[in-house]
Structure formats: C-alpha cells, structure tokens
Length: 161
Length: 95
Image 1 (cartoon, rainbow over the protein chains, first blue to last red):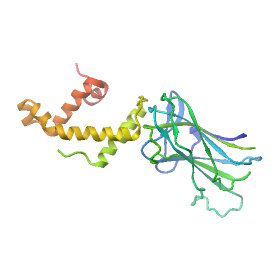
Image 2: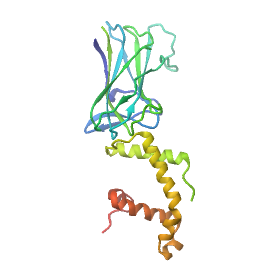
Image 3: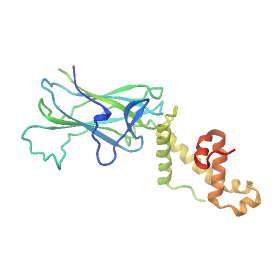
Image 4: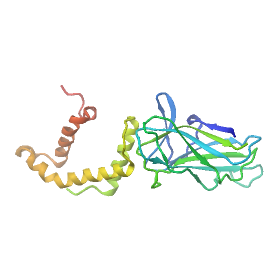
C-alpha cells in the first residue's frame, strides 16, 4: 500500500457553486462541508508511475459541533489519458461516484476521524493520466445524520501496490 | 399568526447548524432530524401560545406595539437568560 497523493485545502479546486468554504480551525486550513446540502471540491494531479491495484481515498476530517450521528461521503475520479477525446475546457467525465458507508462521527467535536472510500469506480486510471478527485459530503443522504459542518483537513489517495 | 412554512423552518434548521459550526459550539447527542423536529416543535409552540403571550403583555404595549416588536421583545427576554452576546449584537452594549 502506497500513498499516491495528498490533497490539502489550500490546493482544492472549487466549482462555481455548492462548494465547501475554505476556513481555518485553530490556524489549520479546512474545507467546511455543509450538513444540509451537498458541496464538493476536487484536486488535480498526474497519476504517478507505479500506480496499481485498487485505489482508496481517505478523508481526514473533524466535526465542527456534532458529537453524534453519521456522515456519508462520496468520491469520484476523472482520468484523462493522452489522446482522449475529452474537451477539457468544456466537458467533465467523472466516473460513477463511490460512496463511503455511514460512519459515526467522533464523540467529541474537533477530534480527527479518517473515513476510507474504496474507489471501485476509478475511470480506468493509469500511470501518466491527468486526473481529478472530486469529494463531496453526501449531506442529503438519509444516513448522513450529523449536524453542522464537517471540516476536511486533508485527503489521501492510496493504491494497493 | 400562522406557523412558519416548511421552507422557512428548513432555513432556520440550516442556519442554526451553520451558526453553531462557525462558533465551534458543541451540539451533543443531536442528529439533523432531531434538530429539524426541535425547530418544528418550537414553531408549533410559538403558534399555539401566541395568544397567551399577547394577553400577558400590559395593555399599553399590547395595543400599541406591532407584532414584530412584540416578537423582538420575547426573543430578547429569552435570549437574555441564555445567550446575552447575541442580544448585544442586536441592540448593542447597554448600561
């Protein structure tokens, strides 16, 4: 298992609307994902040489105020290979979303938890692809029951090499 | 006074969660559906007890103040018991 990418709030790419607010918690940069509506952001990278096997995305987060309930997260991969027909300046081609299980938040607000999402749908990503990882809190999922914002401090992409 | 619409109730629900998040105020043991139910219950209570509150007010205020002024009075009195900083944000520092 190897870490292939680490995404931080400062390098997150935001859509035109419905994006998590970039904020700080105790001087730590964080993306605040709303509890009531889905928000997403993404990170771009080049798939490194040696990438292989099943990919897993880990989301490092803490809750702003909640001490109970669950959160549900989704991650999507868009992989573009040299010569692909995707028109980058007008189209997106994210694969089907991968969802986490409903995971209980820590019993104390502000404590770190790490959620793992197996990227079964990874858009056939291969070394050398230009790719994006999109992350969203599935806030309108009935199983996402925790109140208040979820602060994402980092995401990590691992493969099974 | 009619109860608030579903849309307004949901706005209150979202607003409370965002407020507590920005304040980093712990909301212990409450899920989103619990909070939604509490918002609904508070609005239902306000709706059911509006006449009782109105009749409790002294005649001069009851007959001359607007509904909005009466609502602000009640909100400030209740907040003074539990969250004075919010009142200061509304009316400023008072001697």
